[in-house]
Length: 422
Ligand code: IMO
Ligand code: MG
Image (cartoon, rainbow, N blue to C red; front, side, top):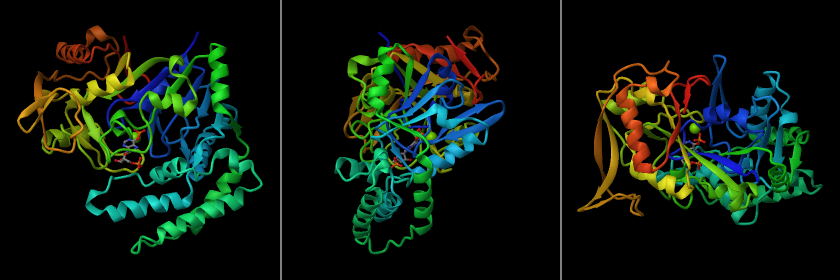
């Protein structure tokens, strides 16, 4: 029996999921998003051209792929339609390749305002949200107030929209210093809702399980990263969904026993955008160098990403929590010119040393590093594993030993073609 394979990020997002999914899609007929929303920014590059996807699964550019936006995703119709129109401008018939879960929740214009109001009221302790309305939409979902894609087809949609909007206005009035005007965005939002009607709305859990029964290869595409998981990430500096493998079960309607291979993506170093704990963060020239060479600026917000060394403590935690079977390492090429490369192998917290990711991730954690000699050569053009410099192979072998997981893919550049599959 076929199962649903999973590919997801093991760090704080931006691991390179878009590229990996795009590379893996020839092996899968169906690509499905199961959580998150337009806070995601999945970058793809092929034929010398770049593309950023926020809501649409990263299989959309491959012919004969079916792309499912699952029930666990939250959708902003404005952003989704903009994205669809940009893809259609490339001559791709999106309506034949995209299916949207009726149970997926809608991000309202007022959800975005609530996100912004909540963040500005937090002042210094702000999360650094992408301000796409993600948190407030998931709050309405669990609060049982939300509007879903399937509701678009109901004759009561307008009334329900207005009721929820007015509820939000009442909430927003609590934020005395916060002024807003949704009229322009609301116009676009209502227009986009109309445009969405031409797409196929489905009971994605039924469709996905039928496809599994029919032995059709399916890939679930994660958004964000494990350390941003609402339960196991660095709370409260997290996103509002389960970004881990467990999210596939609730976000697509796949039973745990039907989850197949789990592929975890990580960068050869670490980045984080937004606030919150980041034990291996660098504030020196090495951090600047990683940001400049790795072009570490947000694909969704353009914000500079915080950069630091690879954190094996956090990575091992993510491997455990996701049940990762295979690792995919991204962007080692960014470290082509480093004399020394460091990896955190444990944390010192006060006078104790821990080798696991602790609850107290907000406390002062001092990483315990192991140093590696840099490979000091350009590895970008290399296409077979054996030709990699021995220092890079040592680095890879160490990560494999520590995590107990094989690194099956080594990506050495943004383009589809810049990759070594072992
Ligand atoms: P992809 O899929 C990196 C971060 C935000 C913020 C926190 C909460 O491209 O890897 P939210 O908008 O969800 O309320 O923000 O999570 N964040 C991401 N960081 N990559 C992402 O997605 C992210 N999505 C959210 O910066 O710190
Ligand atoms: Mg991103």
